[in-house]
Length: 298
Length: 137
Image 1 (tube, rainbow over the protein chains, first blue to last red):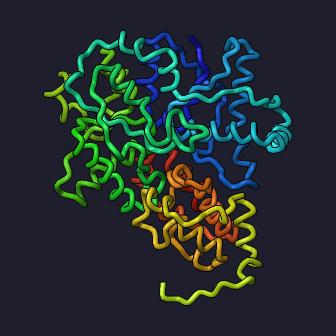
Image 2: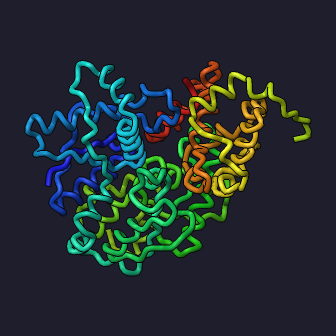
Image 3: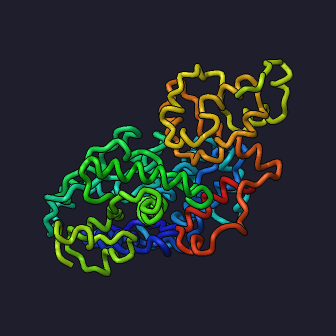
């Protein structure tokens, strides 16, 4: 199956291990990501004011690229646009919803992009987790080669995959899609209340102390519930929960580090893929140091 | 807050209050102050005016209190409040409206020159862009 893929900026740099592992596990499952040509920034956050239309141009222009790909024969009538980064997913999907609900806004955007093909609202923004759910977690299970049955995994949804509920991939308050994936990988999902709590997001730039406190609460909640590691699908959550552990340790000396992986890295591990396909050396907290004894040797 | 506040019809003639209601498209009068938004807010403890009080202030037209609060700059638009509201008030949109009303006056809430160089190199791009989108115009 070939599917158009929107990487977004972080997956080409600080979250390279997310992209590399996702492409590798998708290949194992018979899915080929076709990166959309000339993609542009989605804007990261959705514009929430009614008179702000210009910030929806970025997302919509990417949808036009998908129409182009179908027209040029790069794809065979595949209008699902696959995303990995939770923020890209949210921003693209909300813009798509807005122009469907407000056709006048779409007219303004199409007029602005008069050199491009008109967007008709036909693209569907999907997250990789939804694709996995659709092909079936039992199919994922068939690819599992490494046994992780004594490993407890806390799935961190954060905000952008599940809120607002109009665009979420699962229930906004009791999501389960990640837990289903964890089970199919042979690991044990952890039930914890912080899985839908915001990590502080972009405040990490200019309000570090707030993020340190929030991330400390989230990480210790996972640990109290027995988690050995945390998985996520957002490069910003990953930064706040993984890289910020250094600052958390400075502020809370009793804090014990916990690995934070992209869910696709955990998949790559269980599928028995090579290190360069799972990119575990790029996570801040060393996965092997902490779990070597419990899981598998490098 | 020790300050004495007076409810007056004049409060509602304020340009900022009117603009806020217009661009956020939120009917603040649906709110009956149950406090679910503040209870669900992950950053409640860092705010000097919790979300339900911001709504109350808009209902009463207390614009100065809203513009002075740190609340819209602590809010990271995680949308927990909106999901929890039993009255369908989109508080996340209201908070974006407050940010926009302030930013459109030309008052930035981030000085790009003050960003630590090392941090800038480590941060995912989405952290920078998201912050810029919310704190500068």
